[in-house]
Length: 421
Image (cartoon, rainbow, N blue to C red):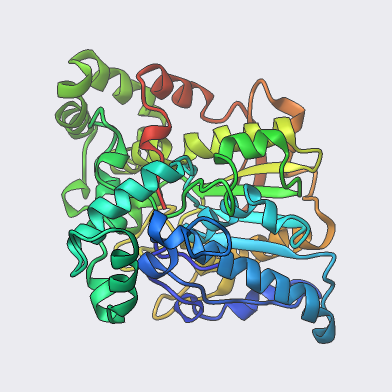
């Protein structure tokens, strides 16, 4: 399931994804699905005529239709309808999470792999409908209408007019660089697409995982420097003193003068091991993604009988890829499908990609991962265990990011700052 903040993207945008099938006897199925306002607009006027009795999350319903097709047809291609794995990256992984909270998806998939997804599926139906009325309807030619008149007006708009009504906050990727400096949270700048409508997505994600709603072997994975996918030139060559200055500029106003130095010390090991620049991206990744995924993995560990794995990619490309030089968002998929473009991969890059393909293939085939490299989170709920993926192999680390995530939580940096979409 492809990414693109659920506002853009397609199967074709990922390059040679068929290479995911070469590590085992797999049949690869990919689908397109509705995006942005076409896939996620929620209004009571639309719910009145929707067979589900709700609206929005149509993109998730499209994916359910594809899963249903797999159940009825994949055997004709040599596949096993009783052994279906869903894998998604970025917002595609967010959609994987949505299926774990979707009663209608139950029984149509049997393993799940979520790569760099948003941990934040919490917005309720009433809030979502009010948000979309304010941001979409009032930004469209249908502004000022309601009820049947609004519905008929929306139906009469062209695709271009509807797309033009999409608010910037649906896909404000640059907002993810804000760090947790706004006490209102990330939702003050980014608007949710996937929401808890009570029908297609029945429960908040963490609650659904803890209840074991769709209990399947699960791999939750992210990268240590997610937002290094769009390098910030000003961070190039940052010194340790420069890192302290940067943290002070970002955090002192909201949290006081003492916190920046504490954060500087907390990330000093990362700074000295890699670079101060790397530490900046790590702060962003931890507060927006990693700590949220840690919480989700722990919730699933409580609710699932199936093994739940949490992985953290530390491996970086051997040389910069268009300025991207750390473990950045989408680097894992790039390596796994060998979508190198003009980049000349090192032997280590190729080994890393092959390792990922093998691991995903193993989970898809058996529902388990190699016990020497992976420990299910159920075995250590008190000290969450994550497997760290490096270029030369994978190793389990108990208590990974516990101190960091506990610290941010103590400062009130919670799911309000987790990625949305």
